[in-house]
Image 1 (cartoon, rainbow, N blue to C red):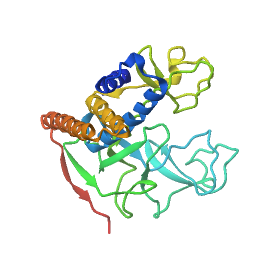
Image 2: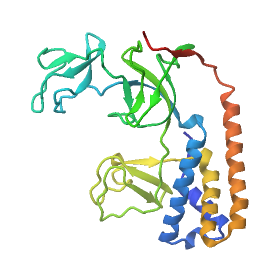
Image 3: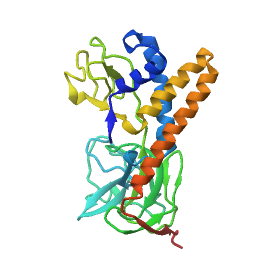
Length: 294
Protein backbone atom coordinates (compact mmCIF):
# COMPACT_ATOMS: atom_id res chain seq x y z
CA UNK A 1 0.00 0.00 0.00
CA UNK A 2 1.31 3.45 -0.88
CA UNK A 3 1.76 5.47 2.28
CA UNK A 4 2.84 8.89 3.50
CA UNK A 5 4.19 9.96 6.91
CA UNK A 6 1.48 10.97 9.36
CA UNK A 7 3.34 14.27 9.76
CA UNK A 8 2.24 15.22 6.23
CA UNK A 9 -1.45 14.90 7.17
CA UNK A 10 -1.01 16.87 10.40
CA UNK A 11 0.83 19.71 8.69
CA UNK A 12 -1.79 19.99 5.93
CA UNK A 13 -4.68 20.09 8.42
CA UNK A 14 -3.08 22.76 10.59
CA UNK A 15 -2.08 24.74 7.52
CA UNK A 16 -5.74 24.84 6.49
CA UNK A 17 -6.55 26.09 10.00
CA UNK A 18 -3.90 28.81 9.70
CA UNK A 19 -1.80 27.37 12.52
CA UNK A 20 1.95 26.89 11.84
CA UNK A 21 2.91 23.31 12.67
CA UNK A 22 5.83 24.62 14.74
CA UNK A 23 3.36 26.30 17.10
CA UNK A 24 1.10 23.30 17.67
CA UNK A 25 1.01 22.10 21.29
CA UNK A 26 0.49 18.52 22.46
CA UNK A 27 -3.20 18.99 23.29
CA UNK A 28 -3.94 20.43 19.85
CA UNK A 29 -2.06 17.59 18.16
CA UNK A 30 -3.96 15.00 20.20
CA UNK A 31 -7.29 16.63 19.37
CA UNK A 32 -6.51 16.68 15.67
CA UNK A 33 -5.42 13.03 15.79
CA UNK A 34 -8.82 12.07 17.20
CA UNK A 35 -10.43 13.71 14.17
CA UNK A 36 -7.97 12.07 11.80
CA UNK A 37 -8.59 8.58 13.18
CA UNK A 38 -12.34 9.06 12.84
CA UNK A 39 -11.97 10.27 9.25
CA UNK A 40 -9.54 7.46 8.51
CA UNK A 41 -12.06 4.82 9.49
CA UNK A 42 -14.91 6.57 7.69
CA UNK A 43 -12.95 6.92 4.45
CA UNK A 44 -11.39 3.46 4.72
CA UNK A 45 -14.71 1.64 5.15
CA UNK A 46 -16.58 3.83 2.65
CA UNK A 47 -15.15 1.95 -0.34
CA UNK A 48 -13.21 -1.30 -0.98
CA UNK A 49 -9.97 0.45 -1.89
CA UNK A 50 -7.85 -2.07 -3.84
CA UNK A 51 -4.83 -1.39 -1.65
CA UNK A 52 -6.78 -2.26 1.50
CA UNK A 53 -8.15 -5.58 0.22
CA UNK A 54 -6.87 -9.10 0.83
CA UNK A 55 -7.90 -12.52 -0.47
CA UNK A 56 -6.59 -15.25 1.81
CA UNK A 57 -7.13 -18.90 2.57
CA UNK A 58 -8.72 -19.28 5.99
CA UNK A 59 -9.33 -22.44 8.00
CA UNK A 60 -12.18 -23.17 10.39
CA UNK A 61 -10.04 -23.75 13.48
CA UNK A 62 -6.56 -22.84 14.69
CA UNK A 63 -3.76 -25.33 14.15
CA UNK A 64 -2.88 -27.66 17.03
CA UNK A 65 -0.05 -26.30 19.19
CA UNK A 66 2.13 -28.13 21.70
CA UNK A 67 2.21 -24.97 23.83
CA UNK A 68 -1.55 -24.91 24.43
CA UNK A 69 -3.40 -26.95 27.04
CA UNK A 70 -6.67 -28.28 25.61
CA UNK A 71 -9.92 -29.01 27.41
CA UNK A 72 -12.39 -31.70 26.41
CA UNK A 73 -14.47 -30.43 23.51
CA UNK A 74 -11.81 -28.10 22.08
CA UNK A 75 -11.41 -28.36 18.31
CA UNK A 76 -8.21 -28.00 16.27
CA UNK A 77 -6.88 -28.69 12.82
CA UNK A 78 -3.90 -30.92 12.12
CA UNK A 79 -2.27 -32.31 8.97
CA UNK A 80 -2.32 -36.12 8.79
CA UNK A 81 -0.75 -37.87 5.81
CA UNK A 82 -0.67 -34.58 3.92
CA UNK A 83 -4.37 -33.86 4.49
CA UNK A 84 -5.84 -31.15 6.71
CA UNK A 85 -8.22 -32.70 9.22
CA UNK A 86 -10.23 -31.41 12.17
CA UNK A 87 -10.18 -33.07 15.58
CA UNK A 88 -12.05 -32.72 18.87
CA UNK A 89 -10.37 -33.22 22.24
CA UNK A 90 -11.97 -36.14 24.10
CA UNK A 91 -10.31 -35.37 27.41
CA UNK A 92 -8.43 -32.60 29.17
CA UNK A 93 -4.80 -32.20 28.09
CA UNK A 94 -3.78 -29.16 30.07
CA UNK A 95 -0.40 -30.56 31.10
CA UNK A 96 0.49 -32.93 28.26
CA UNK A 97 0.95 -32.55 24.51
CA UNK A 98 -0.74 -35.29 22.50
CA UNK A 99 -0.69 -35.11 18.72
CA UNK A 100 -4.09 -35.38 17.03
CA UNK A 101 -4.36 -38.53 14.97
CA UNK A 102 -1.96 -40.50 17.17
CA UNK A 103 -4.11 -41.31 20.19
CA UNK A 104 -7.78 -42.17 19.66
CA UNK A 105 -8.55 -41.83 23.35
CA UNK A 106 -7.34 -38.21 23.36
CA UNK A 107 -8.49 -36.92 19.99
CA UNK A 108 -11.36 -37.93 17.77
CA UNK A 109 -12.48 -36.68 14.34
CA UNK A 110 -15.15 -33.99 14.45
CA UNK A 111 -18.68 -35.17 13.90
CA UNK A 112 -21.31 -34.31 11.32
CA UNK A 113 -22.41 -31.40 13.49
CA UNK A 114 -19.01 -29.67 13.04
CA UNK A 115 -19.66 -25.95 12.61
CA UNK A 116 -17.72 -24.32 9.82
CA UNK A 117 -16.86 -20.70 10.54
CA UNK A 118 -13.89 -18.34 10.25
CA UNK A 119 -13.30 -16.29 13.38
CA UNK A 120 -12.76 -12.54 13.06
CA UNK A 121 -9.39 -12.94 14.74
CA UNK A 122 -7.25 -16.02 14.16
CA UNK A 123 -3.85 -16.82 15.62
CA UNK A 124 -0.97 -15.50 13.51
CA UNK A 125 -3.21 -13.87 10.88
CA UNK A 126 -4.47 -10.32 10.31
CA UNK A 127 -7.93 -9.76 11.81
CA UNK A 128 -10.77 -9.62 9.31
CA UNK A 129 -12.41 -6.30 8.56
CA UNK A 130 -15.41 -6.02 6.24
CA UNK A 131 -15.95 -9.29 4.37
CA UNK A 132 -16.95 -8.99 0.71
CA UNK A 133 -16.77 -12.53 -0.69
CA UNK A 134 -16.11 -16.12 0.30
CA UNK A 135 -14.92 -18.65 -2.28
CA UNK A 136 -14.57 -22.43 -2.30
CA UNK A 137 -11.21 -22.16 -4.10
CA UNK A 138 -8.40 -19.72 -4.76
CA UNK A 139 -9.73 -16.99 -7.07
CA UNK A 140 -6.19 -15.87 -7.84
CA UNK A 141 -5.27 -19.14 -9.54
CA UNK A 142 -8.66 -20.10 -10.98
CA UNK A 143 -10.46 -18.12 -13.62
CA UNK A 144 -13.78 -19.65 -12.60
CA UNK A 145 -14.50 -19.87 -8.88
CA UNK A 146 -17.52 -20.87 -6.83
CA UNK A 147 -18.85 -18.24 -4.48
CA UNK A 148 -19.92 -19.59 -1.10
CA UNK A 149 -22.97 -18.35 0.78
CA UNK A 150 -22.19 -16.98 4.22
CA UNK A 151 -23.32 -14.67 6.99
CA UNK A 152 -21.36 -12.60 9.47
CA UNK A 153 -22.06 -12.91 13.19
CA UNK A 154 -20.35 -11.90 16.41
CA UNK A 155 -18.30 -15.08 16.09
CA UNK A 156 -17.07 -14.50 12.56
CA UNK A 157 -17.92 -15.63 9.03
CA UNK A 158 -20.43 -18.48 9.28
CA UNK A 159 -20.93 -21.06 6.53
CA UNK A 160 -24.35 -22.74 6.24
CA UNK A 161 -24.62 -26.21 7.80
CA UNK A 162 -24.64 -29.12 5.38
CA UNK A 163 -22.58 -27.32 2.76
CA UNK A 164 -20.06 -29.52 0.96
CA UNK A 165 -16.68 -27.81 1.39
CA UNK A 166 -13.02 -28.65 1.68
CA UNK A 167 -10.98 -27.94 4.83
CA UNK A 168 -10.79 -24.21 4.06
CA UNK A 169 -12.31 -21.31 2.16
CA UNK A 170 -10.85 -18.19 0.56
CA UNK A 171 -12.05 -14.93 2.06
CA UNK A 172 -11.94 -11.58 0.28
CA UNK A 173 -11.95 -8.91 2.93
CA UNK A 174 -10.86 -5.40 3.75
CA UNK A 175 -8.16 -5.03 6.37
CA UNK A 176 -9.12 -3.06 9.44
CA UNK A 177 -8.37 0.65 9.33
CA UNK A 178 -5.09 1.58 11.01
CA UNK A 179 -4.89 4.14 13.80
CA UNK A 180 -2.27 6.79 14.46
CA UNK A 181 -1.12 8.74 17.50
CA UNK A 182 0.37 12.14 18.23
CA UNK A 183 1.87 10.95 21.52
CA UNK A 184 5.66 11.05 21.24
CA UNK A 185 7.74 8.15 22.52
CA UNK A 186 8.59 8.37 26.24
CA UNK A 187 11.99 6.83 27.00
CA UNK A 188 10.99 6.21 30.65
CA UNK A 189 7.80 4.30 29.86
CA UNK A 190 7.09 0.65 29.08
CA UNK A 191 4.81 -0.05 26.12
CA UNK A 192 2.39 -2.93 25.64
CA UNK A 193 1.35 -4.59 22.39
CA UNK A 194 -0.88 -2.29 20.28
CA UNK A 195 0.27 0.89 22.04
CA UNK A 196 0.85 3.74 19.59
CA UNK A 197 3.55 6.40 19.52
CA UNK A 198 4.67 9.17 17.20
CA UNK A 199 8.27 9.71 16.12
CA UNK A 200 8.83 13.35 15.09
CA UNK A 201 12.25 12.40 13.67
CA UNK A 202 10.72 10.62 10.69
CA UNK A 203 7.11 11.83 11.01
CA UNK A 204 5.64 8.33 11.30
CA UNK A 205 3.38 6.69 13.86
CA UNK A 206 4.38 3.28 15.23
CA UNK A 207 2.45 0.39 16.78
CA UNK A 208 4.03 -1.81 19.44
CA UNK A 209 4.04 -5.46 18.31
CA UNK A 210 6.23 -6.85 21.10
CA UNK A 211 6.22 -5.51 24.67
CA UNK A 212 8.83 -2.75 24.84
CA UNK A 213 10.62 -1.98 28.15
CA UNK A 214 11.84 1.58 28.80
CA UNK A 215 14.41 2.74 26.28
CA UNK A 216 13.27 0.40 23.50
CA UNK A 217 12.13 3.04 21.03
CA UNK A 218 11.19 2.29 17.42
CA UNK A 219 14.67 3.48 16.43
CA UNK A 220 16.55 1.44 19.06
CA UNK A 221 14.41 -1.72 18.92
CA UNK A 222 12.68 -1.80 15.51
CA UNK A 223 11.75 -5.48 16.00
CA UNK A 224 9.33 -4.37 18.73
CA UNK A 225 7.53 -1.83 16.57
CA UNK A 226 5.64 -1.67 13.30
CA UNK A 227 5.50 1.52 11.29
CA UNK A 228 1.92 2.65 10.69
CA UNK A 229 1.91 3.88 7.13
CA UNK A 230 -0.78 6.46 6.45
CA UNK A 231 -2.64 5.43 3.27
CA UNK A 232 -1.78 7.80 0.44
CA UNK A 233 -5.26 7.47 -1.06
CA UNK A 234 -6.88 8.91 2.10
CA UNK A 235 -4.24 11.42 3.22
CA UNK A 236 -5.75 14.53 1.58
CA UNK A 237 -9.31 13.56 2.55
CA UNK A 238 -8.33 12.98 6.20
CA UNK A 239 -6.46 16.28 6.42
CA UNK A 240 -9.41 18.26 5.05
CA UNK A 241 -11.91 16.25 7.08
CA UNK A 242 -9.96 16.72 10.29
CA UNK A 243 -9.80 20.46 9.59
CA UNK A 244 -13.59 20.47 9.17
CA UNK A 245 -14.03 18.64 12.48
CA UNK A 246 -11.71 21.18 14.08
CA UNK A 247 -13.95 24.04 12.86
CA UNK A 248 -17.22 22.78 14.32
CA UNK A 249 -16.37 23.18 18.04
CA UNK A 250 -15.18 26.69 17.15
CA UNK A 251 -18.69 27.57 15.95
CA UNK A 252 -17.57 28.05 12.33
CA UNK A 253 -20.42 26.02 10.86
CA UNK A 254 -20.52 27.82 7.50
CA UNK A 255 -16.86 27.07 6.84
CA UNK A 256 -17.39 23.51 8.10
CA UNK A 257 -20.22 22.89 5.63
CA UNK A 258 -18.08 24.14 2.73
CA UNK A 259 -15.16 22.05 3.93
CA UNK A 260 -17.35 18.96 4.22
CA UNK A 261 -18.31 19.38 0.58
CA UNK A 262 -14.64 19.64 -0.37
CA UNK A 263 -13.80 16.50 1.62
CA UNK A 264 -16.62 14.57 -0.07
CA UNK A 265 -15.38 15.69 -3.49
CA UNK A 266 -11.85 14.50 -2.68
CA UNK A 267 -13.18 11.09 -1.66
CA UNK A 268 -15.33 10.82 -4.78
CA UNK A 269 -12.35 11.68 -7.00
CA UNK A 270 -10.20 8.99 -5.37
CA UNK A 271 -12.98 6.43 -5.78
CA UNK A 272 -13.27 7.30 -9.47
CA UNK A 273 -9.53 6.76 -9.88
CA UNK A 274 -9.65 3.43 -8.05
CA UNK A 275 -12.58 2.17 -10.10
CA UNK A 276 -10.82 3.15 -13.31
CA UNK A 277 -7.70 1.25 -12.33
CA UNK A 278 -9.69 -1.82 -11.23
CA UNK A 279 -11.52 -2.03 -14.56
CA UNK A 280 -8.20 -2.40 -16.33
CA UNK A 281 -7.38 -5.62 -14.47
CA UNK A 282 -8.23 -9.26 -15.11
CA UNK A 283 -11.88 -10.14 -14.69
CA UNK A 284 -12.74 -12.93 -12.27
CA UNK A 285 -15.79 -15.10 -13.02
CA UNK A 286 -17.83 -16.28 -10.06
CA UNK A 287 -20.03 -19.24 -10.92
CA UNK A 288 -22.58 -18.51 -8.20
CA UNK A 289 -23.11 -19.27 -4.57
CA UNK A 290 -22.73 -22.88 -3.56
CA UNK A 291 -25.98 -24.21 -2.18
CA UNK A 292 -26.33 -26.20 1.02
CA UNK A 293 -26.10 -29.95 0.46
CA UNK A 294 -29.42 -31.74 1.03
